[in-house]
Length: 200
Ligand code: GTP
Ligand code: MG
Image 1 (tube, rainbow, N blue to C red):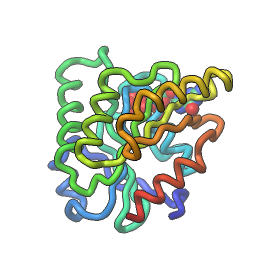
Image 2 (cartoon, rainbow, N blue to C red):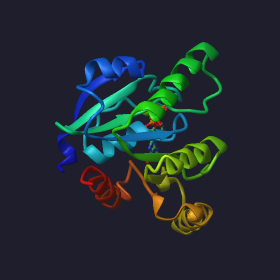
Image 3 (spheres, rainbow, N blue to C red):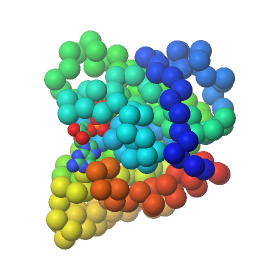
């Protein structure tokens, strides 16, 4: 798969809209999930080599819709609203969290979840909940430790190893890799895993 050919498909406020626009719940979808500001949209742009594909922002809570990108007719990447951000109005927060929950629970073509965590603050409660939920649902997880350019090499590897140890109980269901959208660190590995998920 040539990820550089990824195209924006639709933004949906909830799963009902998604069902309406997409031809059924078929093919392969890979979702990018994580706390607000973890770097989901930036990672999508880095992996597809398209700077403006997904909207990024310094302000957490940028992605408020389920944004779907098309790799080809049967394969899609999905940028999900971030979780865990305290400063948005409760009503709005509830709306996205509902959309996120619905998407995760109801989308049967969901074939893999990339859980992005800032390498400086990995494995918060909600991250662990997301990972546990995916594994219980038999969906493979790629835990990406983002913004790895912010740490010195030795601290970075220490963190990666600690997170691997923490998630070892999940066996092959969960892979852990460092990633930097800024420097391109981890890109070949991530693309390799996404390719595998796209070709089951
Ligand atoms: P929401 O849509 O709000 O949930 O956030 P998001 O997870 O999509 O994060 P986004 O990609 O918008 O990035 C948030 C901030 O982190 C931006 O200021 C990015 O420039 C910065 N950022 C993302 N990835 C990296 C990285 O690899 N290195 C560095 N140094 N900064 C990054
Ligand atoms: Mg985003």
